[in-house]
Amino acid sequence: MLGDPTAAGVDPRAGLGRVTRRPGPVAAVGLVLATVLAGLAAVSPATADSDQLPPSQDNPPGCATATSSSAQGCGAQGRDHFGNPDHKPPIQACDHVRSPAGSEVTRVVPRGPLRADGSLAFTSGACVYLPPGYATAKLRYPVLYLLHGGGGDEADWVSYGHIQALLDAQYAADPRRALIAVMPDGTDAQWYDAYDGSLLNERYVLDYLVPFVDRHLRTIADRRGRVVDGLSNGGYGSMLLAAKAPDRFIAAGSMSGNLGARTMGGLGRPLVPGTPPLQEATAYYQGNVPASLASNLDGVDLTIDWGATCSKDLTTDLCSTWAFEQSFRFDNQYFRAQLDAVHHRGVYEYRETEGGHAWRWWTAWLRDRHLPFLWKRLARPEPAGARARPSALPGSFRYRSIAPAFSVYGYDVALDRPAREFLDLSDVSARGLTVQGSGAATITTAARYRPGHDYRVSGAGGGDLTARADGAGRLRLTVDLGPAHQFEQYSPAQRLQEATGPYWTVRTVAITELKTVVGAAEAGRGARARGRPAPRRRGRSRRGRGRRRR
Image 1 (cartoon, rainbow, N blue to C red):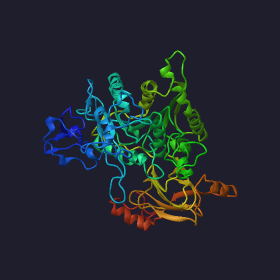
Image 2: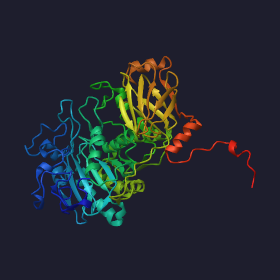
Image 3: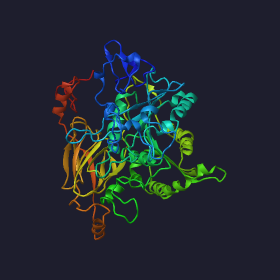
Image 4: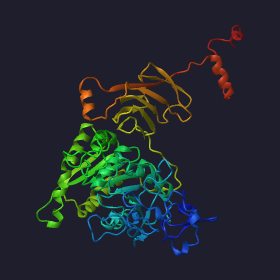
């Protein structure tokens, strides 16, 4: 892995700057920043990895027209919608900030998804906390993805939440709690992919930022070593990302979470009741709120706090935000009810506690409640040379999505239907699965079967079929879900059609291995070819019938 100090001489001041490999020429670590320290100035810029954007392209959506220098994109200045005097632009707040304990906070700008013409469609910066000793330790670390709230940017947890001092103190108390913290910019904290394509936050975090971090830092690069947490809109984001990708996060947290996305305008629903949205996208909204995806969170342990009360003896300033906190009361309670309704398979902590919508509470909740909860689930730092241990497939899982194509736990699903609606998978195991939806679903299973062996597939529609596992042990199935629906789910037309009679097609698909009957002669030839004696025939040999017993 690039930048691995086990194979490189690292300037301990450089953090994510540059490294010198021994033996060999000077090389650049993956997370190359705009400036480097004088001791490393001789490193050629041409060695920078192509998945790190130059500073001039640091322009997330909504800021490209803002005032910025030609050398530095406007994303480096961040956002300060509320005029906070403590706000620092991310380029300053996360500019190789080293603590007395030896930790470092720096900033990266990974490349994001591209448009069809090859131009950059979306990007966003991220501040990264590296624990004390990272530069010299030969360890891989778990990662906490920590999300900011509305109107903020990637430096919020550094400037207002004092995350560096908080994590340094935890490390001093117990070095086994060392972790990497990644704080992305959620582009005004929306955290989803907008229905009109103007925002790609979800795709950016899951498909670009997480792989970028795992490529360039010594991480435990599977769900054992990955958790997500956040405040306000970031609490919504953490629950959404965990529900969309339960195979990537072992646990998730929400503090004062806006779990109903009530202040978010990119989901195709009105922000003000009674007013029409810019585009009616009822299923899109349902497919991007955590309560509708509660069943996806099986196996993901959750910790949730929001401020239900505020003591009178506290100052007015601390309690003044409590009233705003109450706007999220119903959505947090409804989310909890949905976890219970789907019989969430895992542990969750839910607290209606004292607090308001302010940093005083979030920092305390993270330190005293969420971090201890998350650390109990995270893998401990492990030797950098240890063999990777991918997370095991769950014995059975369920998952639902409105996406026309998705992947989860090694299963790839592609749908042929025009309307936006949920596809529901349940009881997914090596023995088969149950599918509910319309149209046709092409499903490639995880690598859980014997390569080259034949399997009987029953219940997919059209009679029993035979499928052969490929070289990786995956099966490809097509499930017939009847005529494809034409109306978006939850729309008035769809509700009317569903009310008139049977609407969904449900298929219970069984998968069983076909046993091959092998003749004795063939078995003997195969055994001799493998260097083992052929099986002996039963009964006496003709030659031995007349012999006398000695």
